[in-house]
Length: 124
Image: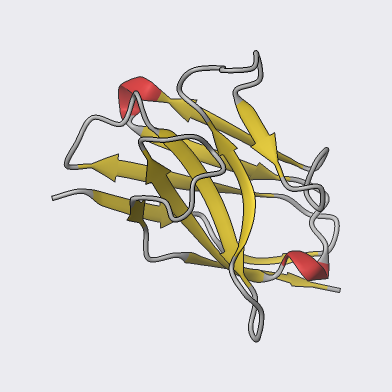
């Protein structure tokens, strides 16, 4: 059974940093695109970023404009783990953050597998 488990969320002051981890199990994810999404209260879920297994366009990572330059996605294929390093956090980054996996491109909708989410709260 495929499982994605996020960890690392919490409360941080504006300007601070957090790293989210997503551990995948129940399958081989080295060939998968791994993505991060978030959903704030009263808002729709939105794409944060993703890392593809193959750099189709010589770019393996993609980011939403709102987080570009502040967030970094990386993966450790040997550990089946993907990371979201979040720096210079802003109150508007407050949301429930989800890890997701798909066998297709980063812009696929929907992704095939989802974690249960981890809460990130940024205080001003």
